Image (cartoon, rainbow over all chains, first blue to last red; front, side, top):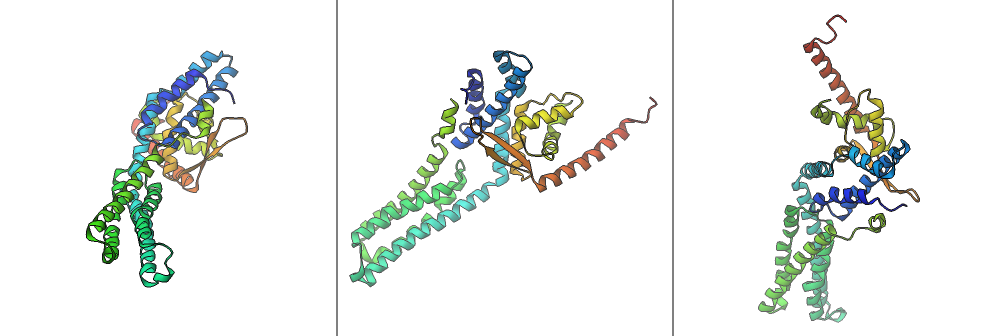
Length: 220
Length: 111
Protein backbone atom coordinates (compact mmCIF):
# COMPACT_ATOMS: atom_id res chain seq x y z
CA UNK A 1 0.00 0.00 0.00
CA UNK A 2 1.12 3.51 -0.77
CA UNK A 3 2.06 5.81 2.11
CA UNK A 4 -0.60 8.25 3.23
CA UNK A 5 -0.45 11.68 1.58
CA UNK A 6 0.84 14.22 4.15
CA UNK A 7 -2.11 16.55 3.51
CA UNK A 8 -4.53 13.70 4.12
CA UNK A 9 -2.58 12.66 7.20
CA UNK A 10 -2.94 16.18 8.62
CA UNK A 11 -6.64 16.13 7.82
CA UNK A 12 -7.07 12.79 9.59
CA UNK A 13 -5.26 14.17 12.64
CA UNK A 14 -7.65 17.14 12.73
CA UNK A 15 -10.57 14.76 12.32
CA UNK A 16 -9.45 12.46 15.14
CA UNK A 17 -8.19 14.98 17.68
CA UNK A 18 -11.61 16.10 19.06
CA UNK A 19 -12.55 12.43 19.44
CA UNK A 20 -9.51 11.30 21.42
CA UNK A 21 -11.08 11.89 24.80
CA UNK A 22 -14.24 10.05 23.86
CA UNK A 23 -13.40 7.11 21.65
CA UNK A 24 -11.07 4.32 22.61
CA UNK A 25 -8.04 3.47 20.51
CA UNK A 26 -9.92 1.02 18.33
CA UNK A 27 -12.76 3.46 17.69
CA UNK A 28 -10.30 6.19 16.69
CA UNK A 29 -8.49 3.82 14.40
CA UNK A 30 -11.73 2.88 12.64
CA UNK A 31 -12.69 6.54 12.17
CA UNK A 32 -9.32 7.24 10.57
CA UNK A 33 -9.34 4.15 8.38
CA UNK A 34 -12.83 4.83 7.09
CA UNK A 35 -12.07 8.47 6.30
CA UNK A 36 -8.74 7.53 4.70
CA UNK A 37 -10.34 5.06 2.30
CA UNK A 38 -13.01 7.59 1.36
CA UNK A 39 -10.54 10.43 0.81
CA UNK A 40 -8.22 8.30 -1.30
CA UNK A 41 -11.21 7.18 -3.40
CA UNK A 42 -12.08 10.84 -3.97
CA UNK A 43 -8.47 11.58 -4.90
CA UNK A 44 -8.50 8.74 -7.42
CA UNK A 45 -11.70 10.12 -8.92
CA UNK A 46 -10.25 13.62 -9.21
CA UNK A 47 -7.04 12.24 -10.77
CA UNK A 48 -9.16 10.38 -13.35
CA UNK A 49 -10.73 13.74 -14.22
CA UNK A 50 -7.29 15.12 -15.05
CA UNK A 51 -6.27 16.92 -11.85
CA UNK A 52 -2.71 16.75 -10.58
CA UNK A 53 -2.02 14.98 -7.29
CA UNK A 54 -1.91 18.08 -5.11
CA UNK A 55 -5.08 19.59 -6.57
CA UNK A 56 -6.83 16.22 -6.42
CA UNK A 57 -6.09 15.93 -2.71
CA UNK A 58 -7.34 19.46 -2.08
CA UNK A 59 -10.50 18.79 -4.08
CA UNK A 60 -11.07 15.52 -2.22
CA UNK A 61 -10.73 17.20 1.16
CA UNK A 62 -13.05 20.00 0.08
CA UNK A 63 -15.69 17.50 -1.00
CA UNK A 64 -15.31 15.46 2.18
CA UNK A 65 -15.88 18.61 4.21
CA UNK A 66 -14.45 20.35 7.22
CA UNK A 67 -12.64 17.98 9.59
CA UNK A 68 -14.02 19.87 12.56
CA UNK A 69 -17.60 19.57 11.35
CA UNK A 70 -17.14 15.91 10.44
CA UNK A 71 -15.72 15.05 13.87
CA UNK A 72 -18.42 17.12 15.60
CA UNK A 73 -21.00 15.02 13.76
CA UNK A 74 -19.30 11.80 14.86
CA UNK A 75 -19.07 13.02 18.44
CA UNK A 76 -22.70 14.05 18.43
CA UNK A 77 -23.73 10.66 17.10
CA UNK A 78 -21.53 8.89 19.66
CA UNK A 79 -23.19 10.83 22.49
CA UNK A 80 -26.60 10.03 21.10
CA UNK A 81 -25.62 6.40 20.89
CA UNK A 82 -24.47 6.32 24.49
CA UNK A 83 -27.73 7.91 25.58
CA UNK A 84 -29.66 5.41 23.51
CA UNK A 85 -27.78 2.56 25.14
CA UNK A 86 -28.69 4.31 28.40
CA UNK A 87 -26.30 4.52 31.24
CA UNK A 88 -28.68 2.26 33.16
CA UNK A 89 -28.11 -0.59 30.73
CA UNK A 90 -24.35 -0.17 30.79
CA UNK A 91 -24.46 0.11 34.56
CA UNK A 92 -26.68 -2.95 34.92
CA UNK A 93 -24.34 -4.99 32.74
CA UNK A 94 -21.32 -3.81 34.74
CA UNK A 95 -23.05 -4.68 38.03
CA UNK A 96 -23.92 -8.23 36.99
CA UNK A 97 -20.48 -8.97 35.53
CA UNK A 98 -18.90 -7.72 38.74
CA UNK A 99 -21.36 -9.75 40.79
CA UNK A 100 -20.47 -12.89 38.83
CA UNK A 101 -16.69 -12.45 38.82
CA UNK A 102 -16.32 -11.45 42.45
CA UNK A 103 -18.78 -14.20 43.34
CA UNK A 104 -16.45 -16.71 41.74
CA UNK A 105 -13.54 -15.19 43.64
CA UNK A 106 -15.44 -15.44 46.90
CA UNK A 107 -16.58 -18.99 46.15
CA UNK A 108 -13.07 -20.13 45.33
CA UNK A 109 -11.75 -18.64 48.54
CA UNK A 110 -14.57 -20.20 50.56
CA UNK A 111 -13.84 -23.59 49.00
CA UNK A 112 -10.20 -23.36 49.94
CA UNK A 113 -11.02 -22.38 53.50
CA UNK A 114 -13.56 -25.18 53.83
CA UNK A 115 -10.97 -27.61 52.54
CA UNK A 116 -8.53 -26.37 55.12
CA UNK A 117 -10.93 -26.71 58.02
CA UNK A 118 -12.94 -29.81 57.14
CA UNK A 119 -10.19 -31.96 55.67
CA UNK A 120 -6.92 -30.69 57.11
CA UNK A 121 -5.18 -33.76 55.86
CA UNK A 122 -6.23 -33.06 52.30
CA UNK A 123 -5.32 -29.36 52.35
CA UNK A 124 -2.85 -28.52 49.57
CA UNK A 125 -2.33 -24.92 50.65
CA UNK A 126 -1.28 -23.68 54.04
CA UNK A 127 -3.51 -21.26 55.89
CA UNK A 128 -1.16 -18.41 55.02
CA UNK A 129 -1.30 -19.32 51.35
CA UNK A 130 -5.08 -19.41 51.42
CA UNK A 131 -5.09 -16.00 53.00
CA UNK A 132 -2.78 -14.81 50.25
CA UNK A 133 -5.15 -16.16 47.60
CA UNK A 134 -8.25 -14.51 48.97
CA UNK A 135 -6.48 -11.27 49.87
CA UNK A 136 -4.73 -10.74 46.55
CA UNK A 137 -5.08 -13.24 43.73
CA UNK A 138 -8.84 -13.82 43.79
CA UNK A 139 -9.92 -10.14 43.79
CA UNK A 140 -7.18 -9.30 41.29
CA UNK A 141 -8.40 -11.87 38.76
CA UNK A 142 -12.03 -10.96 39.39
CA UNK A 143 -11.23 -7.26 39.00
CA UNK A 144 -9.40 -7.80 35.71
CA UNK A 145 -12.26 -9.93 34.37
CA UNK A 146 -14.79 -7.29 35.43
CA UNK A 147 -12.71 -4.39 34.05
CA UNK A 148 -12.60 -6.21 30.73
CA UNK A 149 -16.40 -6.12 30.59
CA UNK A 150 -17.22 -2.69 32.00
CA UNK A 151 -18.20 -0.14 29.30
CA UNK A 152 -15.22 2.21 29.06
CA UNK A 153 -15.83 5.91 29.48
CA UNK A 154 -18.96 5.29 31.53
CA UNK A 155 -18.30 6.46 35.07
CA UNK A 156 -21.68 5.39 36.34
CA UNK A 157 -21.12 1.84 35.05
CA UNK A 158 -17.76 1.80 36.80
CA UNK A 159 -19.38 2.78 40.09
CA UNK A 160 -22.01 0.08 39.62
CA UNK A 161 -19.19 -2.42 39.06
CA UNK A 162 -17.84 -1.57 42.52
CA UNK A 163 -21.17 -2.21 44.23
CA UNK A 164 -20.88 -6.02 44.59
CA UNK A 165 -17.51 -5.54 46.27
CA UNK A 166 -19.25 -4.34 49.43
CA UNK A 167 -21.36 -7.44 50.18
CA UNK A 168 -18.65 -9.81 49.01
CA UNK A 169 -16.08 -8.15 51.23
CA UNK A 170 -18.48 -8.51 54.14
CA UNK A 171 -19.03 -12.19 53.28
CA UNK A 172 -15.29 -12.85 53.10
CA UNK A 173 -14.98 -11.23 56.52
CA UNK A 174 -17.80 -13.33 57.95
CA UNK A 175 -16.30 -16.54 56.63
CA UNK A 176 -12.70 -15.89 57.70
CA UNK A 177 -13.39 -14.14 61.02
CA UNK A 178 -13.19 -17.36 63.09
CA UNK A 179 -9.71 -18.09 61.79
CA UNK A 180 -7.92 -14.74 61.74
CA UNK A 181 -7.09 -12.08 64.31
CA UNK A 182 -9.30 -9.02 64.16
CA UNK A 183 -6.61 -6.50 63.17
CA UNK A 184 -5.28 -8.73 60.44
CA UNK A 185 -8.81 -9.43 59.26
CA UNK A 186 -9.58 -5.73 58.85
CA UNK A 187 -6.39 -5.21 56.84
CA UNK A 188 -7.09 -8.21 54.67
CA UNK A 189 -10.65 -7.11 53.94
CA UNK A 190 -9.49 -3.63 53.03
CA UNK A 191 -6.86 -5.21 50.79
CA UNK A 192 -9.46 -7.48 49.19
CA UNK A 193 -11.71 -4.55 48.35
CA UNK A 194 -8.85 -2.27 47.27
CA UNK A 195 -7.19 -4.85 45.00
CA UNK A 196 -10.54 -5.68 43.44
CA UNK A 197 -11.49 -2.05 42.84
CA UNK A 198 -8.07 -1.03 41.52
CA UNK A 199 -7.83 -3.96 39.13
CA UNK A 200 -11.27 -3.04 37.69
CA UNK A 201 -10.22 0.57 37.19
CA UNK A 202 -6.78 -0.19 35.75
CA UNK A 203 -8.10 -2.82 33.35
CA UNK A 204 -10.89 -0.51 32.12
CA UNK A 205 -8.36 2.31 31.68
CA UNK A 206 -5.95 0.11 29.73
CA UNK A 207 -8.78 -1.00 27.45
CA UNK A 208 -9.72 2.58 26.75
CA UNK A 209 -6.21 3.82 26.10
CA UNK A 210 -4.68 0.73 24.55
CA UNK A 211 -2.02 0.93 21.85
CA UNK A 212 -3.29 1.41 18.28
CA UNK A 213 -3.16 -1.77 16.28
CA UNK A 214 -0.47 -2.58 13.79
CA UNK A 215 -2.80 -1.72 10.90
CA UNK A 216 -2.91 1.92 12.01
CA UNK A 217 0.88 2.07 12.26
CA UNK A 218 1.05 0.67 8.75
CA UNK A 219 -1.00 3.62 7.53
CA UNK A 220 1.58 6.15 8.77
CA UNK B 1 -31.61 22.53 -1.24
CA UNK B 2 -32.12 23.63 2.36
CA UNK B 3 -29.52 22.05 4.63
CA UNK B 4 -32.19 21.23 7.22
CA UNK B 5 -34.26 19.43 4.59
CA UNK B 6 -31.22 17.52 3.40
CA UNK B 7 -30.07 16.66 6.90
CA UNK B 8 -33.47 15.24 7.86
CA UNK B 9 -33.62 13.05 4.77
CA UNK B 10 -30.02 11.87 4.54
CA UNK B 11 -30.70 8.64 6.45
CA UNK B 12 -33.45 7.76 3.98
CA UNK B 13 -31.17 8.57 1.04
CA UNK B 14 -28.53 6.25 2.46
CA UNK B 15 -31.04 3.46 3.03
CA UNK B 16 -32.36 3.90 -0.51
CA UNK B 17 -28.87 3.42 -1.92
CA UNK B 18 -28.17 0.41 0.30
CA UNK B 19 -31.43 -1.18 -0.76
CA UNK B 20 -29.71 -1.85 -4.09
CA UNK B 21 -26.83 -3.63 -2.43
CA UNK B 22 -24.04 -3.31 0.15
CA UNK B 23 -21.69 -0.38 -0.29
CA UNK B 24 -19.03 1.60 1.50
CA UNK B 25 -19.32 5.29 2.28
CA UNK B 26 -17.69 6.59 -0.90
CA UNK B 27 -19.97 4.50 -3.13
CA UNK B 28 -23.03 5.60 -1.15
CA UNK B 29 -22.11 9.25 -1.67
CA UNK B 30 -21.40 8.70 -5.36
CA UNK B 31 -24.73 6.93 -5.96
CA UNK B 32 -26.67 9.67 -4.18
CA UNK B 33 -25.01 12.22 -6.46
CA UNK B 34 -25.72 10.12 -9.55
CA UNK B 35 -29.41 9.70 -8.79
CA UNK B 36 -30.15 13.32 -7.96
CA UNK B 37 -30.92 15.49 -10.99
CA UNK B 38 -29.77 18.53 -9.06
CA UNK B 39 -26.59 18.73 -6.99
CA UNK B 40 -27.36 18.16 -3.33
CA UNK B 41 -24.02 19.57 -2.12
CA UNK B 42 -23.83 16.84 0.49
CA UNK B 43 -20.43 16.87 2.19
CA UNK B 44 -19.24 13.29 2.21
CA UNK B 45 -17.95 13.47 5.77
CA UNK B 46 -21.50 14.03 7.01
CA UNK B 47 -22.48 10.56 5.85
CA UNK B 48 -20.54 8.74 8.55
CA UNK B 49 -22.46 9.98 11.59
CA UNK B 50 -25.60 9.02 9.67
CA UNK B 51 -24.23 5.56 8.91
CA UNK B 52 -23.22 5.01 12.52
CA UNK B 53 -26.68 6.08 13.64
CA UNK B 54 -28.31 3.70 11.21
CA UNK B 55 -26.05 0.93 12.47
CA UNK B 56 -26.91 1.74 16.08
CA UNK B 57 -30.63 1.63 15.27
CA UNK B 58 -30.23 -1.74 13.58
CA UNK B 59 -31.21 -0.50 10.13
CA UNK B 60 -27.85 -1.32 8.61
CA UNK B 61 -25.05 -3.69 9.49
CA UNK B 62 -21.41 -3.09 8.74
CA UNK B 63 -18.32 -5.18 8.25
CA UNK B 64 -14.69 -4.38 7.56
CA UNK B 65 -13.11 -5.79 4.43
CA UNK B 66 -9.35 -6.16 4.08
CA UNK B 67 -8.52 -6.85 0.42
CA UNK B 68 -4.92 -7.83 -0.21
CA UNK B 69 -2.73 -4.84 -0.93
CA UNK B 70 -5.56 -2.33 -0.56
CA UNK B 71 -6.88 -0.07 2.14
CA UNK B 72 -9.37 -1.61 4.55
CA UNK B 73 -12.90 -0.43 3.94
CA UNK B 74 -16.10 -0.65 5.91
CA UNK B 75 -19.05 -1.94 3.94
CA UNK B 76 -22.63 -1.33 4.99
CA UNK B 77 -25.70 -3.41 4.17
CA UNK B 78 -29.36 -2.71 4.83
CA UNK B 79 -31.28 -4.96 7.20
CA UNK B 80 -34.94 -6.01 7.07
CA UNK B 81 -35.65 -3.41 9.72
CA UNK B 82 -33.91 -0.86 7.52
CA UNK B 83 -36.08 -1.78 4.56
CA UNK B 84 -39.18 -1.35 6.71
CA UNK B 85 -37.95 2.01 7.93
CA UNK B 86 -37.24 3.13 4.37
CA UNK B 87 -40.75 2.10 3.30
CA UNK B 88 -42.23 3.98 6.25
CA UNK B 89 -40.19 7.10 5.51
CA UNK B 90 -41.01 6.98 1.80
CA UNK B 91 -44.76 6.79 2.52
CA UNK B 92 -44.48 9.62 5.02
CA UNK B 93 -42.51 11.75 2.56
CA UNK B 94 -45.09 11.21 -0.16
CA UNK B 95 -47.90 12.27 2.17
CA UNK B 96 -45.90 15.27 3.33
CA UNK B 97 -44.86 16.48 -0.13
CA UNK B 98 -48.40 16.00 -1.44
CA UNK B 99 -49.78 18.09 1.41
CA UNK B 100 -47.19 20.82 0.89
CA UNK B 101 -47.94 20.86 -2.84
CA UNK B 102 -51.63 21.28 -2.07
CA UNK B 103 -51.04 24.16 0.30
CA UNK B 104 -48.62 25.86 -2.06
CA UNK B 105 -50.94 25.29 -4.99
CA UNK B 106 -48.29 23.43 -6.94
CA UNK B 107 -49.72 21.78 -10.04
CA UNK B 108 -52.95 23.83 -9.91
CA UNK B 109 -51.67 26.81 -11.93
CA UNK B 110 -51.80 26.67 -15.74
CA UNK B 111 -48.47 25.99 -17.48
